[in-house]
Image (cartoon, rainbow, N blue to C red; front, side, top):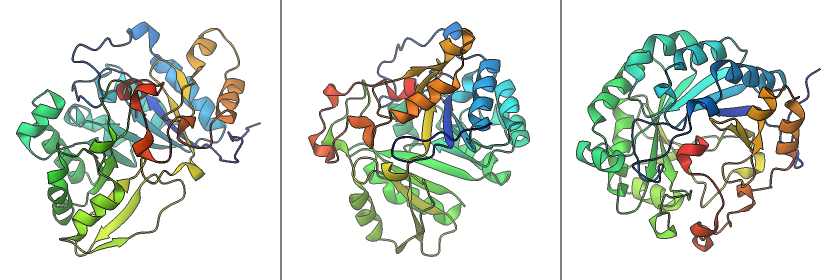
Length: 329
C-alpha cells in the first residue's frame, strides 16, 4: 500500500531531485568553494542499483517527477546505466546539466525520453564563461544546445544573475528567445557555503523585469502548481523567459520538492540544516520509508527555517548548509 509523502503543512511531495555526484568538469566559483575541491569517494556515493532502489521506493509512494543533478550528473561513468534504469520507472524524467557531455550521451538522452533538460549557462561571452567556470568549454556547450534543439528536446537555460558580473547580458539572453524555442530562466543569486554571497550582488525579480521592460513588451503567463518560476512571454518571440525569485518572492507555500544528495542524504529543503541518511539505512537493510516520512514531516514552513524573508537581513556566514555542488541544486 502506497502512502503519499506529506509534510505537517499539508504539502504533498511528489518531485525528487537526485544528485548523481558532487564531481564536476567546471569550477564555477558560486557553486564550488575551492578549485581543489575534495570530492566524495565513489564508495560513499549511492551506487547505480542503490539509486534505482531508492527512486523506485519514492515513485511507489507518490513521486511523479525525478530530476537528475550533480555536480555534473553526466561525468559519472555509470550515468548511462542510471538513466536507463530510471527511464523504466513510471515517472517524468528531467535533468540539469552544464551541457558539456550532451554530445557523448545524446543516444541515451533520446532513448530515456527526458521531458526537458536544463542547461546551466551564466554568460554568452566566451571569455567570461572561462572566467566564471575556470574552464574553456563554451563552444562545446553551445553546440550541444543546438543538438538538443535539433532533436526537439525542450531546453531551458538556467542563468544565475549577479550584479557586476553578468547582469549586463540580460537583454542578450532575452534576444535568444527570439531566435530559438528556449526558456531562459533568470535566477536570483542564493547563499550557500563558500560562495561568498552578499545581498548587494542579488539582482531582484523586479530589477530584472524592469530592465527587460525597457526594451521588450512582456506578458505574465499562468504559473503551474508547484512551479518555482514566474514565466513571461516576450511579444513576438518563439521562446519565453522566467525568473526564479527565491530571495525576494519565495515559492515555499506549495513546495513539493525533495533532494537526495549523491551520498544518499535526504534534504527536505534546499536551505535545510538537517539531513536524513537514507543510504546507510538501505545498506544496513533497514526500512527506509519511515525515514523519508519523518524527514518531510520535519520540513520547516519556508526557506529551510534559516533564511529571513528580507534577503538584505541574511547573514550568509551564519547559515548551516552544504555548498551548492554538494547539495545538487
